[in-house]
Image 1 (cartoon, one colour):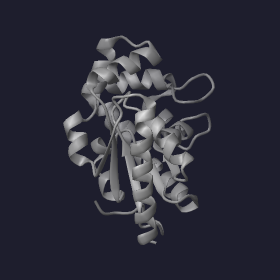
Image 2 (spheres, one colour):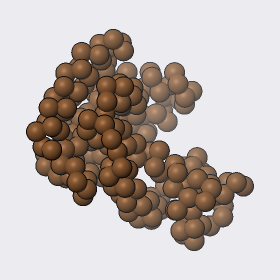
Image 3 (cartoon, rainbow, N blue to C red):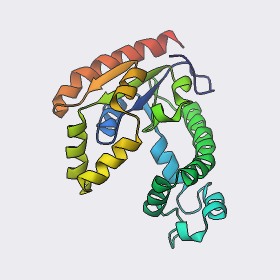
Image 4 (cartoon, rainbow, N blue to C red):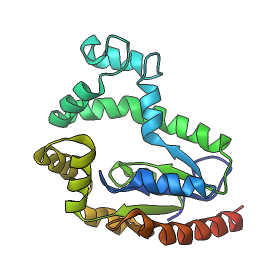
Length: 210
């Protein structure tokens, strides 16, 4: 896949995977090896924190009922609302996505590291991200593994986790979009050789692309 972030770098990786796949673990491992990680979830959190750039427009579009007493977006309430109302989801995305794009491009310009990794949970679903990165890296595992991990860490009921998974891209769609795949169905040690191999590849490609 071709593309760039709009900045001076010509090589970047888009990291994605379904809920519970282990995206954060892989991102942390790549960071430890010298990659610069730009997490779109963290950027979205900052935009919707008290005083964040998206707050005024969220208030205008959705009202104070969707803000916490501290002035942040009430993420749990908003998540439940947009999950049930596709039109509301589109309105929220119209606020957040342009701001996230601006902030990710700023972060990419400022990033050091051997290469840039954009951690994007909904990379496949978004459409535009696939054209903005050079390679797509998917962290993959069985659906039953996803359910087990998320239940263990969050306490959510299985039915709710499966509903979240159903709203995300399918496993087959993610794999079809992937240039590289990390199998995370085993234990953490099984990730090490896979991450080492891809880090070497990405470092080489980044150097070749300037």
